[in-house]
Image 1: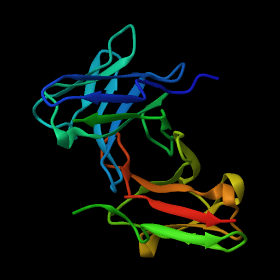
Image 2 (image 1 turned 180 degrees about the vertical axis):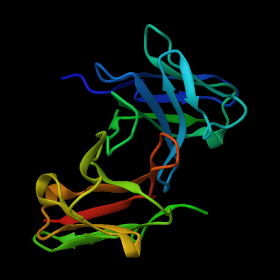
Image 3 (image 1 turned 90 degrees about the horizontal axis):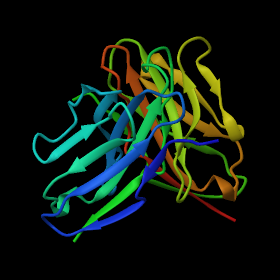
Image 4 (image 1 turned 180 degrees about the horizontal axis):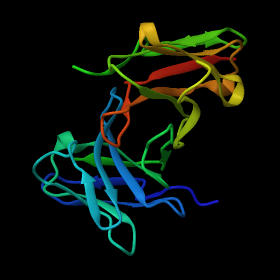
Length: 116
Length: 114
């Protein structure tokens, strides 16, 4: 019963390093969403991808952040030159179809990034 | 700004007490509404959702929520909480004309004392 798998669960980086977070959606799901949760805040939408396509990146910071969902393999959220403000929990979610008509998101356990 | 608010940051209850967590949103038009729960160290799980029909929605583990359109609210209720309900609860809204993402409230932390 493989749900949404994220790794690593915890990642520590020093300022200026790169962070790569991986997400394998549930079997049969081709829609992937990344959310960020800052301390004491709710989840904020970052990006929505389908296989090989970025559909909506309206929540992504303009610099240093990128996401991909290749034809083969997991979706990757990449943060270059990390800063302390990037410390957060990053959640991946997936769905089998677009989020219309009450369809729900299925979440992974999150990746907690700490920037020293 | 369009948003989702949850009234309480942290709620502390004793076992068997009744629970009501508030959720309000500011989007006009048709919305889909959700409550998710995150138990310590686990992923977010869906408790219940409203898409259409009966505004009183029943979910898992004895939870229910009522959609009141005139109040833009979707409050979560449980008549008698258990220690195992200790978790963080998130209200989420998907407006119909707002792309393909959910807007989450800031969350309410529930602590149930045994």
